[in-house]
Length: 374
Ligand SMILES: Cc1ncc(COP(=O)(O)O)c(C=O)c1O
Image 1 (cartoon, rainbow, N blue to C red):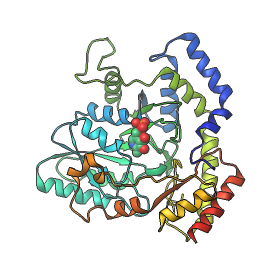
Image 2: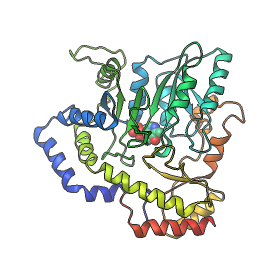
Image 3: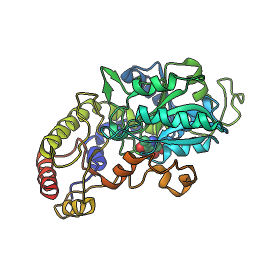
């Protein structure tokens, strides 16, 4: 079976570099906040063009800590796209705030500025929640329309803060600006299948704001300040492990080459499948990090079965918009507000996308997908 992700192949390819990095940590023994954490944070911030980075335990923790650091809590509305991984909204619930689900744009499947404006207007009209934050997700690696969202967020009596959930888009860019420098605060995930994936959980928060960065450092460290005294009332233990930082340092060395290969594969898929399905947005607008190559097609189950028959693994991201999940059902907006998200959930299908695919495998995927979609 041609695998959807290439984690095991990549681990084998990078094995010597990973072994050396891991051995160095075993030797010095600084397993918590050891030197690799600060070294990785510095490289990450420099790569993204952000003022600083703070390594945390996961992408979920990155979102959670970013919201805690800005005192988002009960009574606050946080606008999130309706079509994303559940963690985006779950982190909002974890700080006691209320996620407000916003429809996505049909071309990119990222939060649509016009839909944000409508959702914001409805919350203001109702007057029950205080609009505080927008979390934009760069779905499947494609950067959201930060300029469009920021323009809506800036309108009205109390401007909203913008937080980028870039769990899937490390390495993406728009007009020469990399993910990590597109919003005032960016949350990353290093879950193994992400564009930059660890060998376990990990995440980071990026910002130019020194005050926020220092709050993130305290909060991730169960609330302790640099002097060891409790500085934050509610800090989880959510530091990036030294071992994961060491692994990520090794993986950063080959990141650009992998991204270039994924771009090549994406271009190949897009030309082979043109006209047969709705395809990911073209690179003219922004450069995706290609966390996934997701098409939208009719008769998805049949297409999926045909691909499986041809030895091609596929997956469905995501089978339901967030307000269709039991935990969020009570927060669903009125029927008709999330038509694009609902359509995407019914038709989305992700094909194998990783730098470890051989040319022959890419051709097999294209041939099988063309036959299944024709
Ligand atoms: C959009 C999005 N947000 C948040 C997360 C949460 O990241 P993690 O699994 O590292 O907690 C993920 C991925 O898993 C994600 O895809």
